Length: 140
Image (cartoon, rainbow, N blue to C red; front, side):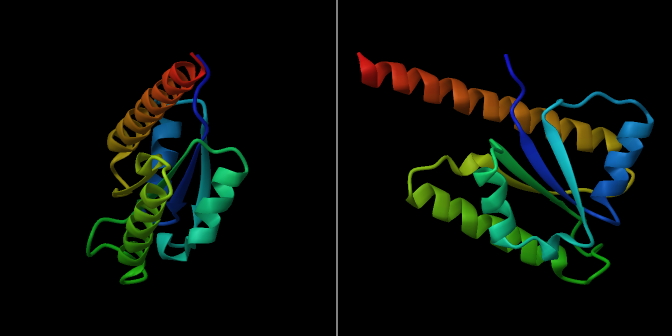
């Protein structure tokens, strides 16, 4: 089975550091992950997430600093709110809201970084499997 393409927006100070640590320790995470380093997740506009889907992503993950730990004070809260809004919008037009995920992560949480990516990839595989089954059901 092909790995789902996951565009992952990582803030420079926390989640990207966790990704770097995971890579340095040669920890395994899904091959379809594409990491985009941003100064702060508060800089991730809804248009960036929609463009990721337009360019072929099957899921988008936004990883922000832990609450109270954002170097730009409230950027992580802005990103969280935007992700909630996009999920609600997706649901209203019949797209699985689970294709967008926001999570909090700290720089020293490389194990958690790998776990989040692996869980998200598995969720996307389940969604795609369900979608294929529904297509088959419609054609019969």
